[in-house]
Length: 411
Image (tube, one colour):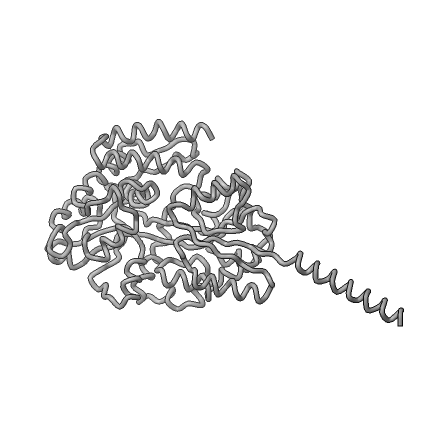
């Protein structure tokens, strides 16, 4: 009897130890999205992941405007989430700070090879993938065809042509010709860079040690932005990209630069957007034209939970989850499996996606450098000064060049 009791007690102790070990192995991880992007499907993916692994995924949503400062604060305090939706311009900065970890060896070869080469290039530093390609937006000009018809003018294929017809686009259909941002740092640059590139200029020199925008071509691009402001929807000093989208979808402005997201929202609400058309990027004086590529990413941080976090991200990066978010938003897929699994991405009649997919090959991206946020703000501040007449285009770029080069030299 005593032997039997001893055996039972020993088994209880073993079971207890096993339970404690299992509890110790069970983890909770945190993933942050921005602006509630994909939240409903993230919750489904998190539930599936917990059912399969026993690991709970805590989901948070931060505002786009606060995200950068918030993650810096948490990183400095050593209290980062395990992974988050962020921007490719953060990649090198977070890598050099030692906060993020590369995905090499943590995700399957199948997933790695599923990403397009262009997407991997944007997310890589020194041969390692320090961010996972996520939402890719290809942007071009969208126009209100009804406004052009009312004005009796042809749709131009150059920025100079747009400026020429702009007065006539301020008509009964659209009171303003253009919608832009000249204030909010990131969104100002989002609106301006396609013009800078079209004019044959760029942000950085080839060696990325100095800026390259203070050239005759760069000054001409900035002057174009200043001139367009005369016909732009008021409020651009306070606007974000959301306001520019609203100005277009409410037919307040005839032209703006973005993707199909706003039109997709109209479609979802049962409203017509037959008056809208997505056109190829406008050309500069030398015939150059580029769509604007925005690569949002998933970043993974050095929290000790990298392996299990990578497994969750691998689940999330499936057509049934993230692929559906991309389809609903009108973004461009950067995973081959999404194109194969979701007919909308390969349908030439999908007017909200097909034009942007076709423009992926001419997309240019903002640089991914450690000090990008500082460079972006300096440029945006001087663009804003020029638009509001505080500085001429020449003065703005001369001052911005000096300030930006000082930041670059300090890296």
